[in-house]
Length: 179
Image (cartoon, rainbow, N blue to C red):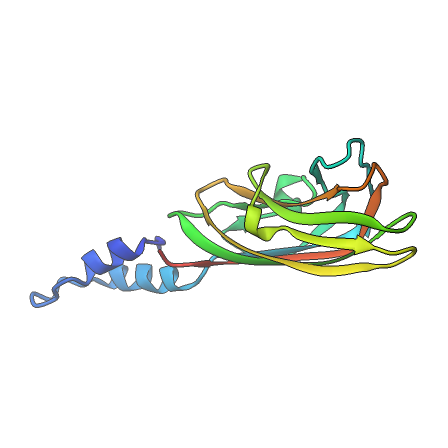
């Protein structure tokens, strides 16, 4: 079975007056309608070392895959904090990350975001000011296009100084849509 683009599906079903729709075309249709999705969560929090103020750092921590369909995660990639699209064709995904974090000291302006292939997706960024011993809780939503082997990761940065932070909890879920 093959996952097809919307254009390829429409071409298969364009005009069936001659009865040309095959059983394989129907199997491909069913497989295409099964969306790509993936999720992961931080199962062991680890301090993210902030070495430079206002510079994005990939969030540290051991991650665990939850459900993967046309995505790879820690289990196959042996890389923490990464969901990689392994399907075809290109897809449009919507994703969300929910998180809670701690940073020592008070009044730290921190930002959280999702990176596509190491580049922050601008509209995914969430900014929080942490109080003393405050668990910063928030969420990042995003959408983007993914091609085969593109990957998504959670990033953080400290806008105030070089105080480290720990993502105590983070969960990322992405779901593809037919394009």
